[in-house]
Length: 471
Image (cartoon, rainbow, N blue to C red; front, side, top):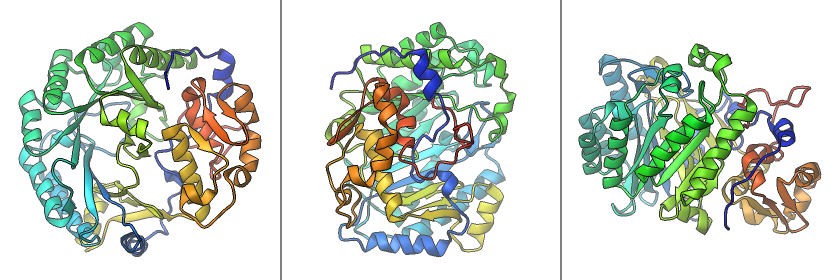
């Protein structure tokens, strides 16, 4: 499908600038509860092992340490300047957790993807990263080297092109580099000052070693303007980065203490934020990037664009991914695991995480066993977020692997009735056989998906309480 630049009316902005989840999971994280135990996790792991066709595994490794505090960041992190005893203690417990997790999965559960996130994964030395990779190789069964994807998030302020080369020598073949914005006033406002030339050198070094290099940008930051962000986009496009994620800034100072350091009067207005989002889309489409979904773009040659074309695209806690229908195994503080039937989250606080590991336990503190309805709605939201359409004539069981023969249109009759306004506003095309998100609707995918979310808590004004605004 050819993609075009789109203008958005102020009426649509006012109507749909609500708060909603990003749907990296369904049900979303606020539904996880502390009644979910390690025993529950083991039960769901065994259930996954015993399925007729066990799914491959994707491993997420959380490294929480950062050299400095970025005011916009909502990730689970610990700010420290040097590799100290705290870091060494964490690394030791992380290796222990990897050993315990590996014991739960048999030889037929191949690891096809490993991703290091944070925090700042390259806070660790090359030797420390090697220890983690070596432990994973010993405890899990890895796919063939030419099929195995090993990715890492990089802070370009604390790595050189030589460091990128060293990571590639260890097996890393996908890199994600944080930029956010090259504008000096924006960088000062969010306490993330980074040298533009050094950053470009790191991006180019990554491209020399990988066919898939992502750059993270953020729209809606304080002091950001259309002109300044256009300059940043032009410079990133010129590097040839194969993927670009232009995330909408989630301003939640009540929940994220670091964001209280941001002057709210310097944030762009709703209209300006949408102009920044539209600018990113227009420039990236003009530069031959494919709009994968929400805030993700990729060149046609990138594996993410290929996954989008072939229908194998998936959305999880790392955003969009090429690996469809894998079980996600999260290790490290705050990491989340996901089976077809459950979610489980690790303890986020370092000291408590270490205590649980020292007690010979998996550090699971909350989670959720999925009901049949959860799995059906999860599948529908995945379809919307990754393929932008739903076959309403199909039986529910075909999409969500259940025994239900009810058609999608019958199962979701109340939701489809509520979508009449979305169709009238041009966000979706809707008939008896199919629901399709339009080009305009791409800007409001979170609002569209939220119609299928039966957990969504709402205030009397209709605003969703615990989530960031969609624009």
